[in-house]
Image (cartoon, rainbow, N blue to C red; front, side, top):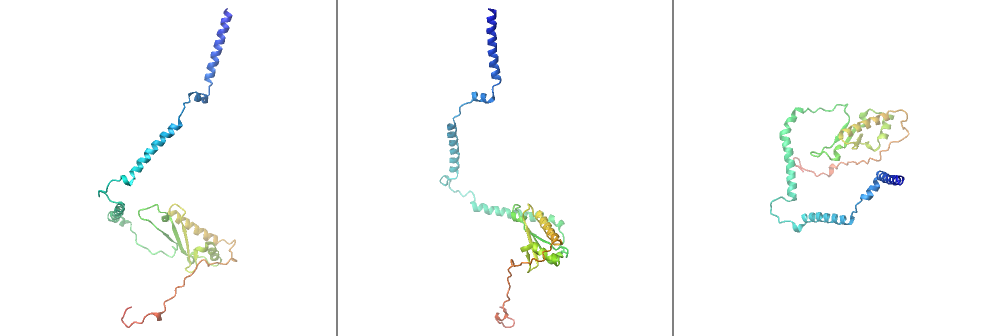
Length: 240
């Protein structure tokens, strides 16, 4: 009898142990499957559509011409507000001229004529009141090739390198740069490019003497003088 009770008790304990082990080793995916709730996606979609429809209807009513109230002459129209904005801009710069311009007099420097060593001319544009304009960072370099000190084969090679940027009628080289973020960086890049061109022109490895210069890209416009005999003859002291 004791043996039978012991066997039955051992079987019950073994079954409970297996149940506990199975519950401890249950994966998270299985647990999610047991606790999963049914979601009515169709009802959620209908609810969202209703909410969005209410928002859109409210916006449509706000901009509907039929629901706009009568003009009570209590505000400016669009062109009036644009005019007021222009007036504010003008007053802003007038205040700057009146109160801040006198303080800049201490930084004024007298104009000095550039010496013969300063042969490079840099040009750029500045838009007052707006620092986001793309054309403000563009810099143009102008220089007369005769002032670079190149002669003979070096000059020939230099003109081949610059190509269409050279104007033989005015003997002027013109280059522009706007790839950098600021005008100062573009100015530095132009100066470096010119130095590289001069350095390449002075290399003696190959002077390209057998390559002819081509200036057909420049179309000259000859200015013809007006014939003096066509001018009306006037008496002495009279004006045309």
